[in-house]
Length: 482
Image (cartoon, rainbow, N blue to C red; front, side, top):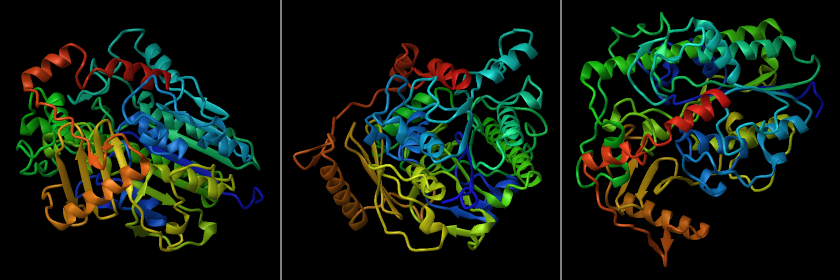
């Protein structure tokens, strides 16, 4: 395949952007004109998931094409290193295929913090840290004093050009301006919004103050004996002081403001490609590493397999020269591990052996995609998805849930009878085929853990053993190192 036939590649990933927070996905309030444009010129995948809704394992699945539990670690772990040859990672495949490769922004994967993952060059977030430090004359409190997973909104203390999303897009535009002509590029821009802290500048901070954002959806099974222990500990552990309705509206409105700022910055990238004459020859993929509960199910953050957390936006805009039908919505079951084989096929880079992901190219062409099962795991939590029905198993206490995701987009109505029995049977068969340790002698593992009280969860958190134990390390690993 000649350079003229191979598309440029622009991969854009965000952090904690839930799938329904786009106008093209039907959100009644948020304005996302440039994401909408990508969807109108390409394909929006309405049934896209991550197999582990936490930053590090999700991003590792993206660059390896393998699910997190197959890599050997399905949790937030800064010390684990994936057992995948470097030459099989996404950056390495594109670089070896003759692409000029650049990664801008957040990495946060199962690799050493300084590892480029096969990309020729990485523009680390440390550059932004230095710029913010200089702007503030070395004073602390660069994010209004808020921690990396706090949900108390605050206006940014920095001008727009020093906001993380804006800075990353600016670095991406500089790469496009100075790249080597005649060589296809592989540019990955990895931004942190709309991940907390809920900090943004105007007009985005107050853009949705008066918008009707509705109320969080809290299913009736939340807080009952049927709620899995792992769901309970996340819900209670992260929400030690319940937010008032006014506070929840403020969080949701600022979150959408961060999404719109991200979208407007994507408009700069599109304009840059158009001015350089590269837009029609560029394959663009937009997605996010997990969603955000935003009060649904009484929860904030992610770390569960409910739809608002595990389902993600995924838009693929093919080059105009491919002549594919634009503006389609595809409901094929897809996942983040599919990105690597998709880009490898498009770039003529050769898909490495052993990947779980499957190329999205048939779906882009409108062809039928062979049905499959998606197994996700986060610590002791499991998800098995067949494209419509989603089965959840908690090995901590043996509780299970099953939902019809097509008819029940907010996980409100647990299913019983035939759908539950069928999905449980498929799950047992799948674990048996994987020789998974959470299946013993044909029986699903139940550790029969007791449910801690809210006071016990708070005590664990104060001791550094609760949901916030990783916050300091997360700040060091992702915000400033990569």
